[in-house]
Length: 284
Image 1 (cartoon, rainbow, N blue to C red):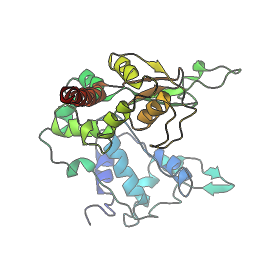
Image 2: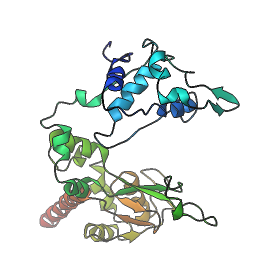
Image 3: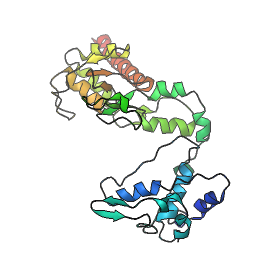
C-alpha cells in the first residue's frame, strides 16, 4: 500500500526542477474551493501529453499530509493568489496544505495488454468511432468560456452536446488492440431478441427500418421505466434506449441504432428469431 498511499512531493519537485516547467498551481485554488462541498468530485480530462501526470503529482504534493510541501508551494503562483471567499469564509492558499491522506492510482499499470494504449490509439480512429460512438448526451448547459456568441441576451444558452462512446467496449478495444464486437458480454444481450419478438404495433418492421439506417419518431411519455409494463411499440423502443441498444435524439424525439457494434447485435438477434420461426414452419 505504501506505493499508493501518500506518495509525497518528490515527483512534483522533479518537475519544478526541470528546465521546462509550467506553473499550473493555481488549479489548487479551485480545488480548495470545492473541498467539503457537493462539487468535490472533480474529473480533469485532457489529451495525452498535456500535463495530466504533472498535475496529479502537484495535487499529491499539496494535499499529502506527510509531504511537508509548504516551501515548495510558497514559491508557486498559488501563493500569490488572492484569498478566495466562499460561504462567508476566507480560503487562503495553504488552508488544506498537507491536510489529507492521498491515494494515487495509475490505472494503466493494472492492465495486462498486448499493445500499449498509445499503439491502440494509433489505429484507425474513424473505425473506433463507427464501432462504438453514436450516443449523445446533452443538457441546457452554458457554452464553454470564449464561446458566448452562441447565445444571446434574450435566449437561453445553447445546449452543449457531447458524443459518448460505449465505454467498456472502447476499453476492451484499447487494451487488446482489436476493434470488434464486445457488447454481447453484457447481461442484457439475451433480452434484445425477446423484446423484438413482442412485435407491439409493428415493432419488427420498425426494427428492420432501424437496421437499414432509418430514424423513427417515438413517444416516450407512456414508458413506465420498468422492464415489464409495455403498452405499445414505443414503450419497448424507449426501454431499448435505456439499455443502450438505441440512441435517442431529444431534439426530434427520434431513436436510431448508434453504431456498428449495436447493429451487429440487432443482426444476431433477428437471425436467431428467423431461424426459430423457420423451425416452427418446418415442423408444421
